[in-house]
Amino acid sequence: MMDETVAMMRELTEAPGIPGYEEPVRQVMRRYLEPLGEIMTDNLGGIAARKVGQMGGPKIMIGSHMDEIGFMVTRITDAGFLKFQTLGGWWEQVMLAQRVEVYTRTGPVIGVTGSKPPHIIPLEERKKPIDKKDMFIDIGATSRAEAEAWGVRPGDPVVPICPFTPMHNEKLLMAKAWDNRLGCALAIETLRQLQGQAHPNIVDAVGTVQEEVGLRGAGTMANVLMPDIGLILETGIAGDMPGVTPDEAECKLGQGPVVLLYDSTMIPHVGLRNLVIDTAADENIPIQFDRMSGGGTDAGRVHIFRAGVPSLVIGSPVRYIHTHAGIVHRDDFDLTVKLLVAVIKRLDAETVQQLHR
Ligand SMILES: [Zn+2]
Image (cartoon, rainbow, N blue to C red; front, top):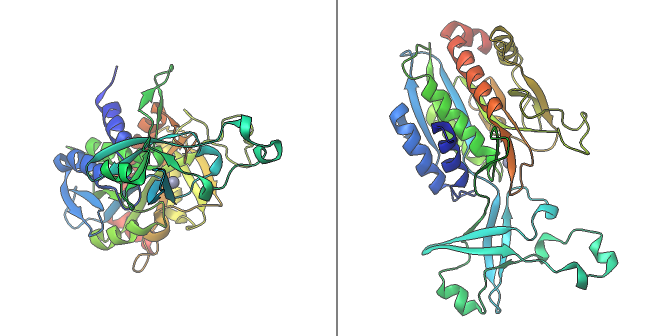
């Protein structure tokens, strides 16, 4: 059984959109956002829908990046294999023997990141992951000319393949690109739930570009939207799996929204953080805390925009981000939307003015 929200999640996660090549995701975003507010864009591919609850009210940015990590073709070898540049943070261990699609100007070409069978690798060599620079993509071409005839050329984006799949427990949803189509889905669903409801502000549901290569599109969208408050919607790092200690990551699937206490690009605004925690308590929404000493979020750019924008990162826990197959829990998603709606309703002019002091 697939409800409307799950259908939207399927479309968002299956859209191919690596940094700088977000167009297919933007098209999905646009289709869902258009009925919900006035569409605004930046010049790099960012998109937002603005819903005015109160004219002249504070502007609340609920944002998420549209790009996922992927690869770009840099060279076709004489034998027809593709060498590539990674876009975003890849770990070698999760890169080999994975299906990918090369998006050429004439359509997608399927491939796989090639790997040697263990039978021919010396024991010592088998102990360490192979270097990214030694990897290649096999599209089944026998020569450079053949690959070119299929439309492949340097600069083409290469995107992981993982069909959206509800698991045996249908509340668990497996897909690629939950980082950060989860945030895109949260932004859309929150704006949808605000339709026909009173809120004392202006809400911008945003999709930014090029977060995975250095938070680049968040600054350009902030310039378009001029936010007073930034709620960045992101993936929390689930730690509920063998081998992960609570000191590394303590969020669990199905245990509620995640508030990020720290990342390497932002200390959250204390007043805003407390407002969110208090709102969750009042609404009986359980919350979890996360911190990320390595890695940043779009909030890193938004909170230092102009004179400063009080910001906080909120999201739902995800297992296995930055791999082909991530897992989220539907209950976390629904509770995160509920929390966002409740927080937005509290952000009136006076409250925001107090946060700005
Ligand atoms: Zn990421």
